[in-house]
Length: 118
Length: 171
Image 1 (cartoon, rainbow over the protein chains, first blue to last red):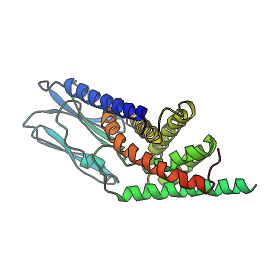
Image 2: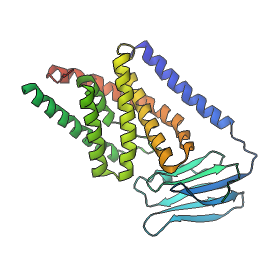
Image 3: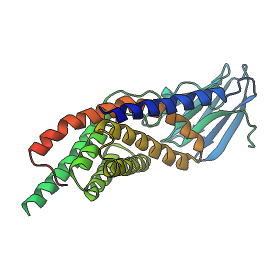
């Protein structure tokens, strides 16, 4: 282990933590929120999120699917038949900028404060 | 001629080992819910190749292992991700070893390689899903790259002297 190595590790950690803090700070908790669902780069649905929104959205067809549930102000990918299941294991999205991605099915769900045109 | 055969055998062995390591890694339950997060054991092979072979052979190894691994255990889209990650990480690590050979140890090179791999995959993913916001995962992946990169670097450092003792040094 050289001195440069430690400097590098420290730099990497500092940049990463700095970016995380900056991302956290640039969130606006008071703003209105929308959940945007995209599949293959195409907009599927935009859903305004409130505490009382209860929705279940199925993306895909008989062969490949992702199941998204919006409940109590949180968006969660609860089911998918993708091989890696990373999207299902991702924690639920509730704040602006949060994102759930299913790369095998090219499905992306994210929360935004910008009204997206459907 | 003899040394050429030896090199060819060594190259094939490295490709085979990288494939086994990728397979082994898929058996280990390490899924923190972040796309692209993994141990990166195959990077051991890339690092060894960079320390013992010429760049062209390293490129061959990375291209062969990503293609073969994706065909055997993955999908067409996983080929895109491992190619973009594997190639970017190879090029970045090769540049460091060439131009700053004395500044960093293998551990640091391995960490930088891991981050380059993450960045390559995320950029490819951003292209595929047409949403640059996926780079949001990079800080998490960078933090993970420190322990995984260190581990890979340490393994490589202990393995290299044995390989060199048996004459596997073609630079």
